[in-house]
Amino acid sequence: MGTFTVGITGGSGSPYTLKVVSALLELEHNVIIVSSKAGKRVLEIESDFLLEGTLENQLSAWQKQLNLNSKNATGLTILDENDYAASIASGSSNSLGMVVVPCSMGSLARIANGISSSLIERAADVMIKEKRKLILVTREAPLSVIHINNMLNLAEIGVEILPASPGFYHKPKTLEDLVDFIASRILDRLGVQNNLVPRWNGPTTEEK
Ligand SMILES: Cc1cc2nc3c(=O)[nH]c(=O)nc-3n(C[C@H](O)[C@H](O)[C@H](O)COP(=O)(O)O)c2cc1C
Image (cartoon, rainbow, N blue to C red; front, side):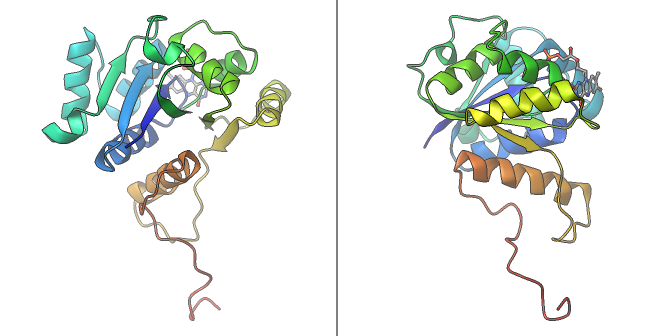
């Protein structure tokens, strides 16, 4: 199966991160995770998920948080945001695509301008230059003209901006239904087959 990179920055939306990582692993893909300092802080605030210590400790924390079995756990790699010698800093890496979820407006601005000041930004820069799939999952609202201009510059070179705006036409009943809606869209855009949410098949007889 394929290898995908998941960048975690300090935007709001950590439930999406957790769902995307666990779904990719369950579907037997390999996942390379790299988080910014702010990304870890938001995971802690929003999902009570504390990532600290060595990379080994962080890997164990992920395994515990996602309740991974030993088979799924082998597909997971954690990298340090300052490790510029890591595989994903090079175009020769086998990462098929990358999603930054959530993507802060600061990270989006730096990626839009080629400022590779962390491994997340460098890996995103590599995806752009190698013309591979790069998806930035944003939450910010409202958007400033600076944000919109940065998004336009990225969209023009093929980077996908995927706002975390769930639809309601599948009649979500729980928070998880809303999270699954966005996670499913992210997997779709990475080209990963999934059945996280039912596909829209037109209105039901009662809705017509
Ligand atoms: C709980 C929390 C939620 C945040 N949500 C957002 C957000 O949705 N969008 C955003 O651009 N920044 C948000 N921030 C601020 C960023 O974390 C901050 O700008 C940080 O410098 C981003 O760093 P990074 O891009 O290196 O991860 C949030 C911060 C916290 C603590």
